[in-house]
Length: 58
Image 1 (tube, one colour):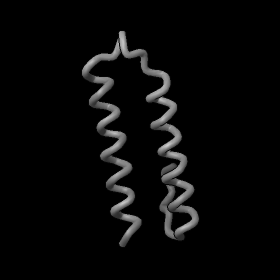
Image 2 (image 1 turned 90 degrees about the vertical axis):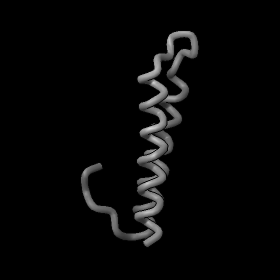
Image 3 (image 1 turned 45 degrees about the vertical axis):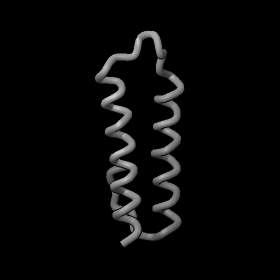
Image 4 (image 1 turned 135 degrees about the vertical axis):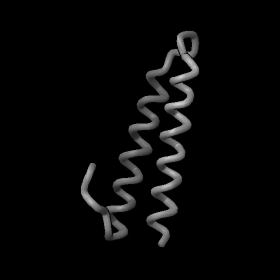
């Protein structure tokens, strides 16, 4: 996923893939064993998605 994404279809596909990765990570977390670092990583993933959305708007 290191290549630049320029056209809208590729941007939407990229965002869908990243969102699916986030959902997979979220599904795999056991609430009983979740550490603060796990929550921080989830927040970081959401922040990255938000940043990409903003970049793609321009």
